[in-house]
Length: 298
Length: 324
Image 1 (cartoon, each protein chain N blue to C red):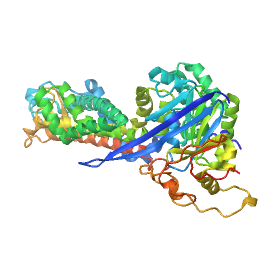
Image 2 (cartoon, rainbow over the protein chains, first blue to last red):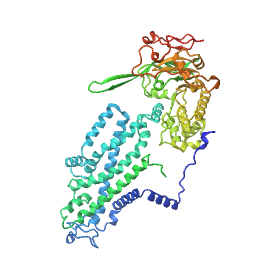
Image 3 (cartoon, chains in turn green, orange):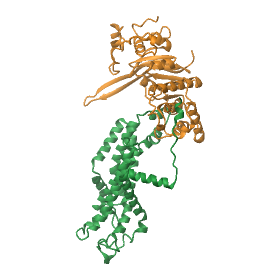
Image 4 (cartoon, chains in turn brown, orange):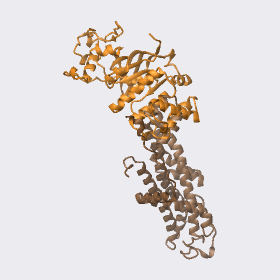
């Protein structure tokens, strides 16, 4: 009997709309929490992308006569102490939150992931030194580290991104290093060396694709943290400068009138909550999907 | 005798472990402790021994996958140990490796086609369509259809993966294959198929083999010459048929008698194997084998025996068995 003839037929995408719909339905019934997370994040992404067209007012237009209005027909979520429309500001604020979260985590993955991968691949004293440096970085609470950086460099969007990225480098270095430690002992890496592949090729062509899923799972969870950190820094006045609409900044401004107009802080708070919740739900779903113990139970 | 393809003289690899604080204790594991052997063109040379005797380390040191500490390795008149950079890469085209574990020897995220075409591209042999065509012919050579090119390792059985691993090793048209237990992870029926394939490649391509195994049956069938290793050293070396039919070293005899022969006429009581293989970090003084040896005498406890080679079957023993 020849074992070569027993190849399974390859799965093929049949490509019809109804097949797509039923696949989506299967996904929703099987992973309800992840689906909710996807929907929440899509809403925020849509709000950010469509803000110029769907927001009823300019986010920075001051309607002095309509200050501190509670939610009503004209201003669906009310107005703040300058008479600015809260709904419009939340829609525009989604841009800042997503921009900061995506760019800072992308930078952290690029820098931290590369450091961790190379460190684990080299091993020995280099690895020891690099990882202990990362532990030092890790020992600062991310908010404190972000606070120091922004306080030193000034409250600019780019500094905020830099600060959050800096706090996330160490965790990504760790998460990228761990699988490299076990993967580099596997025979296909040794085979690569026997075939004369360069270290760069082994690292980025052979190791990277094998650790990417784990890193991206962490990425979605850390994006939630980045949203929170950005909001916290904005809340204590170290975020993007006013009058730019940010969710954290709106909470802080609303705080001044918390007794008269609680909605000013509540609406951006709910927006932050939903985005963080959505990102976490996607992260949990991705983590389960890449966990070999949970995979394959169909 | 034909021109040697590979010549190894006095190869050593010691692993040094320093542990403890504040006064670290240094332990030296003599994995390979001065071995000599040669492999002629197109010859299958076996390295056999128990687990931990250093046979895999020796195989890897030949390919410089583990950097040897001492000794000389010559491949077709090139100094393997001195090779660097492009010279080392040129050598890699001549010597390739087949691995034990077919499940970890292929990158799970690369299709078979890309895995096979990659070495061709890296060494500037073929790219794109030409590379794919060569990958397909490599697959054909190991008995797999070219539909396998776009599939991933997890879609294949252990035997099929081992064939793919062999195809990858053949990609650079090597003259020597170092095979580290190439069939020990496979089912017995599949073992036979893979061994037949390797034998066929040996004849068709004139490949030389360094074949590492703990399975005497496999070595007996595949190899023409064999070296028996014990604790980092070769204790007996010679033509396979003679070494196993009339061993001179008591350790070879013990190994042979411990491996069952599927013949009811030969049924007998298996001899008791005495003791475990000692740690290579603390080998016994004198002959390493003396604590387990039925023929050991006082001199065995003190002096390591000289290498003796009266008739092409060499051994290192003070009290060798009769050649008769």
